[in-house]
Amino acid sequence: MDADWLIILRHKLANRATRGLHIHLFGAPTDRKRLEGLGESILIEFEGARCINHAGNSSVLESLLLITGLEELLCVDSALLHFARLAGVRTTSLWGPTNPVSFIRPQSSVDHVIVYEQQPCSPCVHMLAELPCKGNNFCMHKAALAVGPCIRDSVATSQLVPSGDAS
Image 1 (cartoon, rainbow, N blue to C red):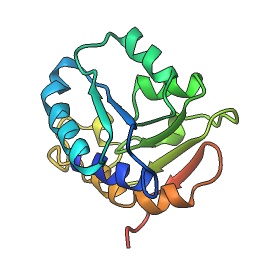
Image 2 (spheres, helix red, strand yellow):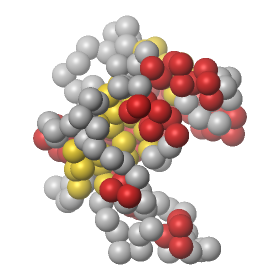
Image 3 (cartoon, helix red, strand yellow):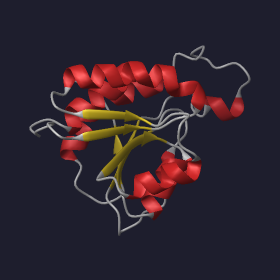
Image 4 (spheres, rainbow, N blue to C red):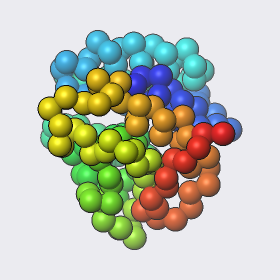
């Protein structure tokens, strides 16, 4: 999934100077080591950017306070996403097996792009003990690959953008 985040960041930061840009990584203590690797990749790819890994070092409240000061939050469906939207932070969310229509209400006061592609096995994580993809999460990967055109072409607030074909 970390490679997917690099793809998304490439599209979000295309044609933008990254010198002095601060990229914050949030997660649980168990995510810290993996996010350190992602942070290293970000520093290599985005010259002059600074990457701060908060995983395991910030409480939920501290994370929420940090998020309210962000220009934009890129994330999966999570509590942080919903709090960021309530705080009026611009967001882009990547959805896998869960249909965002069930959980995201239009909110005219915040820019939000949803990237989602319905899969025949969805919503597997809520219905099956054993995932059909064996945890490969191809629904997330496919959406990430198609995220560039979705982000570039999305202009409406709280727009549901099906990821469609990446070609």
